[in-house]
Length: 121
Image 1 (cartoon, helix red, strand yellow):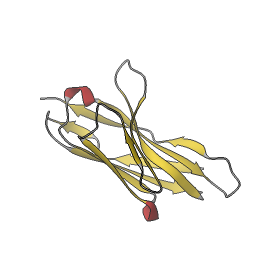
Image 2: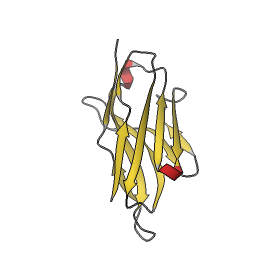
Image 3: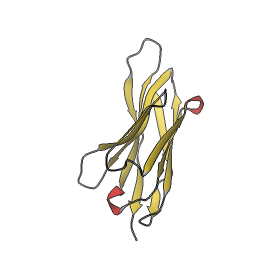
Image 4: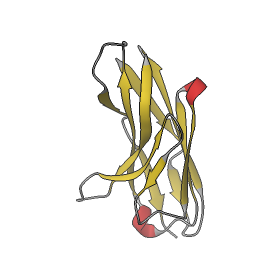
């Protein structure tokens, strides 16, 4: 199994910044992609940003230019730098990883428990 532990959420004023971190541990053979999804109150969980092991990135249109995802492959950790935060960014942010526990196992999705980000004055 793969465990994901998130950190860095909290309360910030509009226009402020936060940095989320997510570390993967456990029986990891490889992680092909890591990233973040978010779920606002009464809304569906949606993609925020993804990064592959080679560094290719994908962002939701709503965060493009404000959020930056990065990754340390040696540490199986990814980071989401969130700048120019808006009240509509308020949500629970979930770390995501697509990983294999052995060379022959099928890549499977893993999720963190979520960290609350609140943008409010």
